[in-house]
Length: 390
Image (cartoon, rainbow, N blue to C red; front, side, top):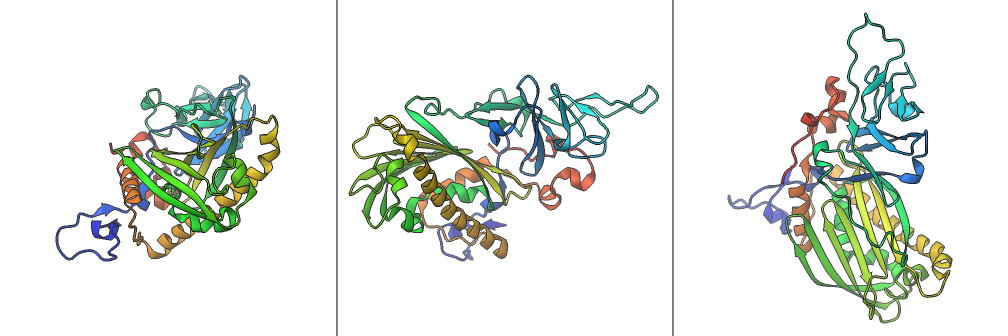
């Protein structure tokens, strides 16, 4: 499915003239795999424990060896295709629960207990993924492994700063990841949160965009209504506090998103948010949101610890309302079979272009079968993956 430039502008109907150039439906554009994506919380991957996770329909088994190193390999045994996430960790190896085939952390087979000299040549193994740990998260590189070394992890200086404390979020949302980018960047939806933050007036101060990013700055003014106590605590009595005006900077730097809020009169953010939306299923109609909310510690010792439950409750409620909206958008797309959005906000139109041009086509075979391997019995390889558009 495609949409024309006239539909982008909100006319609702393609022009009969041969002028508009069709552009791909963003909801059919997949996340570019040539980046580091979080797939689990580090604390959940314990020694000698295996967890199942996924990226865009590719099932991945995570396990931590006795050395403390985390490994990520394709979640299927090359023998009978039984998930390796059902297996047993032995030292630095993962052994399939069925016939005890053992795998190294790079996915290669290290042992088949009953293999004899007269038996046929065994397979080399399954795919291994580059994996790294940072910021309390486990990241994998699902794209071309040769690009992993040269591709940096996101830089989050506030995460390790003694001035900030981090609240971590991990939630599945049943929508295409692009809806999440749009939701956070388009702050004109504050009416949705009226029961939590009262009446907020967001004013777009300006935005900048290039081939890989869109950054917007808003001036937020509280104009009345009841606000949740956690909102003021989160922003050091900033957003929603009396008649204060706070500057919020939101940036999609593909494929991640950040948000900084600077209260009126301050010279640094009261909180900084980093978030990644990781597609889970092959059709990319479901994503997992991993968020790191870095909150400035107030001058009073222990004050943030006391406020922590209220801030958590506030952020969870806001997220729940956002999830309700974006999942409704996804259901509408599913019912209509294409994107009928009448978007008029230039900022979001530019964001969509960034997501389109940096994404990759969703493999129709993968969308139909779960993975290419499910259709033809082959193990997926890099050759099965659409090339990234640069």
